Image (cartoon, rainbow, N blue to C red):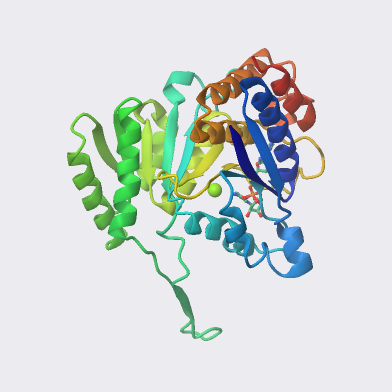
Length: 351
Ligand code: NAI
Ligand code: MG
């Protein structure tokens, strides 16, 4: 088979890690007998600075022809973050009904958790983040600007369809894992949307008697992720809560340099989009020292979703082998290797 893949390297270290992910993917494709037809798009903050838009007007239409999308990261100093987010990432996620943001985390060999004494088994979990609505909304506005009575309103949108499908996805996923789902809520303080979220969670939970379910307020859940991570497996949360929890989950396992994510359209009607959890890291951009592992694991998630499971597993195994060996490590892992050296070592370790 031949897959058509759209590559959007983006900005900063997004560009560096994308090169390594492509290196590993192309090696894997050769090994496992499928083809990858790459088309590269320069959509980025740099493009915004030159043209005034992150992507062309027909950007979404052009992406719709692809089997999948691999994105580096977007965002750069000088361009406000809401422009890079609303000018590219959010339109793609919404147009292609990528309503699941899947962020698996685990402690990889040769890396240390920020939590002392925790084993890999205790730290394995997956954050299922709602990716199409919720708190990330354009509804609201600023009133009485500059006056003593100035106020700002920001509305959240929770639809029954949107809440039900993400929670159902989490329960389905739990049936393939440990059979546990924890929902992030805050229905004590947020009195309209969160009680509704809880109500739908309870309804869906009733359809899965074999899956144990519980809900925890987001603040307590954050503390629990640090103090008792072994009690969590599938964690489902709204767009904002899921975003925060997945950076936290990444931090307690091995750091942002190791955390992949998929923006998934589960029905497969539209292309899904895969990326690292981390951003463009302007503080280390252009130095060639970014850790490419998160992006390479995102590439493996892409192959898994395309149905190339064996090839995806081979990439995961190659990453574990190289990290476990420890000879080639980027500075965030305590080594001196460059982005390209670690990428090449992983490509070279493919079975
Ligand atoms: P960030 O994830 O880019 O960086 C946070 C810290 O982690 C930095 O110190 C960075 O050096 C380090 N780090 C991140 N990835 C690393 C890697 N692969 N290897 C080694 N160290 C790594 O988050 P930050 O600084 O909040 O955001 C920077 C820009 O990225 C902003 O413009 C933001 O909007 C954008 N961003 C874009 C995302 C995307 O495209 N999906 C996601 C998150 C942020
Ligand atoms: Mg985030």
